[in-house]
Image (cartoon, rainbow, N blue to C red; front, side, top):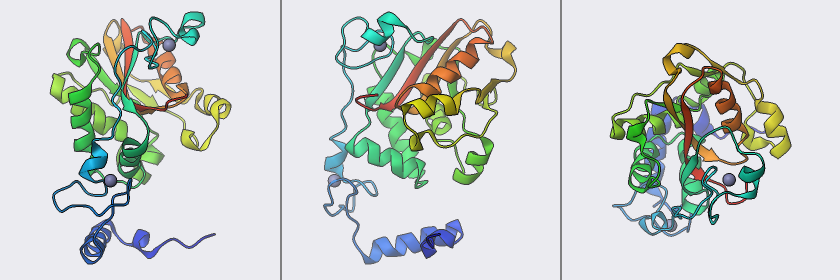
Length: 250
Ligand SMILES: [Zn+2]
Ligand SMILES: [Zn+2]
C-alpha cells in the first residue's frame, strides 16, 4: 500500500492552515492552464479559465438534452427514457471538470457557491425550476456521505431550489445500497452496479407531484435512469432532470 501524504492525516482545521501556509509560501498555479493565480481570482482556477466553460445552447434532444440534435436523438426515438426531459448546464471538460473534481473529490466546498451561481445564471431556458413541486438531489450512501462529509448534489440542489423558492427533499429518494463509485466503472458495469441502489421513503409526499432531480455530472445516465425508475414507484405526475455537467459522448 502506498503511504498517504502527511497532509491527509492531519485534522481538517490543521490541514486547512497547512494548505493556507503552502499557498502563501508558493504562489499557486491555475489547475487548468498552469498560469499563476492572481490575488483577486477564485482559488485553484484563474479568471481566464472560468471564461472557458462551454455552456450548452439549443438545439438539443427534446428528451435527453444531447447537444446538436433537432427533435429527438436516435436513442430517445427508439427507446425513450422514463424522465420527461433532462437538461444540462455545461459540458464536462477542462475548467468545469477541474472545478467539479476540486469540489467533489478534494472536498473544496468553496466551489459549491460558485457552481450554484453558474447554474442559476446559465440554466437552460426550458428548465423553469419554480414550476416544480420538489427538487430532489441524487443521494449518496451514508457511508460515502461520512467519507466525503457532504453530498455534492444536495449542495447544488439546495442552491438551485432556494433561488426558485422550491422545497428540497433529501429523505425521500435514498440510497439503500452502498455501491462502488460509478466513475471507476465502464458503461456496462455502471448499469449493473447501480441496479436496486435506490429506495423511496414516504412515497405519499411525491405522489402526483412534479419532481426535478438534480445531479452534478451526467455520464452514461445509468444512475439517473435507476433513480427515475425508483421514483416512478411512488406515482409522481412528472419527473425531469437537471445536471450541472455532461460528458460529450456518453
Ligand atoms: Zn487558468
Ligand atoms: Zn435523446
